Length: 306
Image (tube, rainbow, N blue to C red):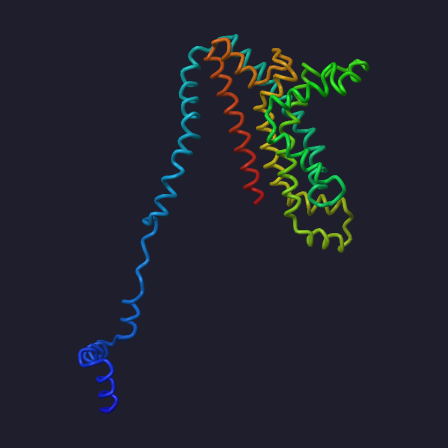
């Protein structure tokens, strides 16, 4: 034992050996103390410069998003004192037309867009890349260009419109033109979201259901559709909000006629252009509330399903 202590003393020196013996008498491990002393102390959460930067950088964007809405609501609280029968009538007319046309547009988009999304997600066929381009193009196309294109295609003297006109069918500058413009600009949002939802479905689940004797319709109804429904709802909200706020293509292809083609965005533009800021603010508040209610309802349904 003495030889071992002398060897330790020669290795660590007298001061080190004294420290080791004092630690042994105290019941602690000297190596543990050395390890604890050598371990770096982690910085407290939220105090690093990266965390501070992550909080500071989004502030201008959040301010840009929030301040206009706050200003609109704040101004809307004072507009209620000056409500007149004409303003209420304009609100009801534009809101009713927007609700009807956007509902019809969404029904058409869901009926035609859901099978298209399924094909794009599940099938590889000749011309699929061209269809991808056609679906994505309205997203980046300026609305005014979309309106001119619709007019040249379906107007009275358009590529297809001249044949429709001979058959007694007029589409341009009618309520049907509003629906067509809304479908043109908003359908890609639904198709893309639906295609992504179909692509994320686990194919093994569908194959297991088929092995258990389910026919393709039962597999689609009981397995696929419940899984893709949150994605379909998300795409529907995006498409509906785009259709409800459509302005450029509508005014170019459908015009701005009260009760026929004057939707909420066009009514806001008309009121503002005529110097009636109060009516424009009132219509904007109504559109903001409607959008918030639909968005909250869809998110509530999606959270419930998860």
